[in-house]
Amino acid sequence: MTTGEMKERTYKRLDEDPSAPVYYTPAEVLAALNLVLRFMALQTFCIERTANFTVSAATCWHTILDQLSDCIKIFRVRKGATRIQPTTFHEQDCFSEAWEATAGAVEKYLTVGTNNFAVTPQPALGDTLSVTYAACPATLVDDADIPEAPEEYHQDLIEGALLILRLKEGSIELRNEWENWMRFMDACLKLATYVRARCQAQDYDVAPPFDIKARDASRKMKMTLEAIKQEKKAA
Amino acid sequence: MNAATIITRLLPQLHATSEGNLVATSRAELLELIDESLKRLARLSLFFVKRTTNQNTANGTATYALPADHLATLHISVANTPLIASSSNELEFQDEAYKTTTGPPAHWYGDGDGLDTFGLYPVPTGVAAIGKLYQHMPAELVDPGALSVTMPAVFDDYLQLRALRETYTKESDIAIPEVAAPLDKILSLYEQAAIQLYGRGQ
Image (cartoon, rainbow over all chains, first blue to last red; front, side, top):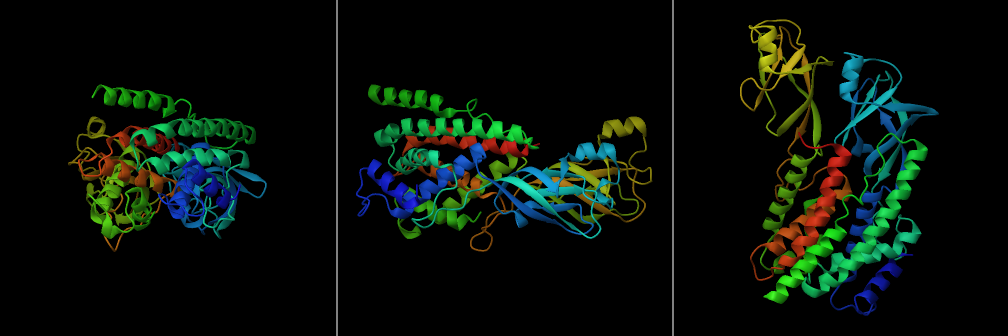
């Protein structure tokens, strides 16, 4: 589905004329679609990219986002056909007192926080590593753009966007969109399960994507909104 | 992340077409909310971690100041040699004169002289770079000069939704308290993601 098609369908779900919307601007709908697309990418790791990362000469610590600005989490690092093993600084402290200043070809890498990437040993002349990572999706801008999420989940992006758009209305309009959000979350869960299995099959370094079912707030949310509804009735 | 971009995205959600016709809030207030959300992320998880080597040991100096934005120390090295994390109790047990014994540093401790210093044991006798890897508070957002923070773009939405939540739940002419419940649940998913991906804040 293209962005234009998704916007049109979203408008129809909002009971707006796509050619002449009154209550929701096209920019607003586009922003909501981008938000749920990013949310899906974060929750499911469905967007995977591989790119080169330049290791500076004789340098242990680097920043990830300078070179991989769309990186959420690194899955795997390779040098040609050789796998670079993940490690932690605690582990490296146990192995070697000089791991931050040892010359040689890269054998291990570690990440700390969102933006710190260290390698050990450090190549004297620098090197280029191939990094596979979970990525932020490209922002949808034009009507011809196609979301990077799998096509079978494009409809679910619309379901999620409806709640985001209705937030400013509150009350019954918001309540009515909650079922759509639950369908969106169910879709995210299904996609996350698939990506998790794929990560395990690929033997990626990080733990598989978190089990959003365990933190699925949609069911708790349904109870919360029912409680609000009952309170309003009582009042 | 650019806070100005987030505010632009918030405008239609706050029934405004420009910052000039915002009701019951303002650009300054939204920036404060975004700043608070950023700091909340910084405390909850190891979202913001940096490594600095801009401090050197000094001959005979046992304790050193921590950076102003310091939240928790993760790793310290001197001349690229990692130090073992210890405590004053542990070091005092080993050596009663731990604050004056000199030699190449092998341990660091953070419970010596208040919350804003750390110590090295043995006390260094020369000059060497101290490599500090620590969880830090992001810089305050200052309008108009400093509104950008380097972070994964997916978390910009966390800042946006939290600002929306706080704006609609405060007492005002545009209050919509019922948005708090769904937004709290969505925001908790972002926070859990940050903790799971990058580690819990120390």
